[in-house]
Length: 473
Image 1 (cartoon, rainbow, N blue to C red):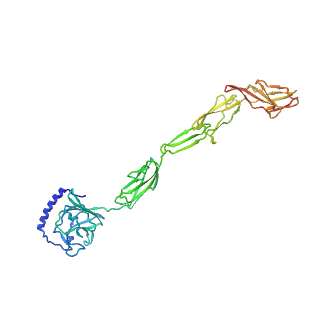
Image 2: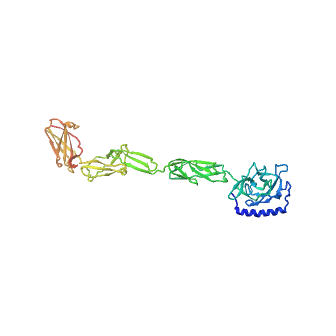
Image 3: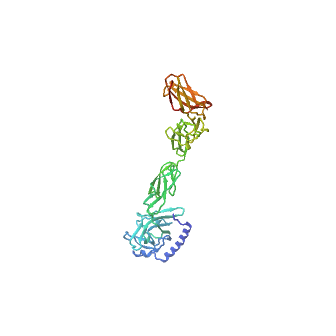
């Protein structure tokens, strides 16, 4: 409400009452103006300023458009200019209710074209565009206002009443820019995806670009999924889908963006190691959304040495280790296991390789290989009476002795084969007797070395020599 200070107004009322009284004594109360003379009574008024006045009998008194006969009205006319197209805000207040009471058909206010005064532009009367009367008990004033859309140009504003002599009124005519309504709202995205700890700014475009009120109200259909600030900044909260709506402040025009929020996973990996006999598993689980994947770790069930037997040659021997899981995949030593080799592998003996698992695997596996003595060869086999004589090449390096085998079967079947142990590695000949006369015998020889394995003495044998045949005499 544009009510003025009551004490000031009452002082002004008293002063103007005195002026009006003096005016009434000077001007004739019966003065009458010609019907076409009301524009000459106009007082120039600047928009935005207040006029304090009243309807007096000395004011223009004449006919009103559309009213015939002897129905005359008092006119109070003000001339003003609109510098550009816009709204004229008309505000009036008074202790006298008659200015805002349009009891008669043509009581009230009117606006005429300044270039063509007979051209009625707007009228507020009993039936049309009535200025609503309101009352402030605190200020003891009646007041009312109305806004009229006008083009740039000059105009007359008239207050018309059938009776004069009313109290003072306070009139203000003000310019307001015309209201340009929003016709559309669009967003920079119709769909978007963000993480639950991420942000995305949506830009709202309003048309027309010169709309009077360009304020936008933002809202989220699911604030538990994502929120939106007054500037269109979308903040992810939790996985899900929500609709972000941008609405013009008048609430009539809006646009939407579908926002999908996904989890910015914080994964934790748990390993249950596999062994040589049992499968393990790898579980990757998000601590935020509980998303998880489980992968089987196949048992390292196929472990082998590249070679399990060597002939002593004075060199150290280290057979390579090959490990495959139960699904056939070859494991990498640097990632899944380490290998430890024993010392002294250049000597005849039985050795253990230790495979120790790591990473996704656990446990220890042992694999053995042997280094056997170097083989010997038969020099000569001579037939003897019901027997034969045998000589061979001496092999005394890391050897204990020799083992001779003879048989009537060239394949050396177990039932037909006899083995003879020569327990001195320096001996290079021997005889076999008490055999069948005129029988073919097959002969071979090998070197053996006694060695300690797991605390027990055990013989390690070289390969057999080539087979020789002899017919007994």
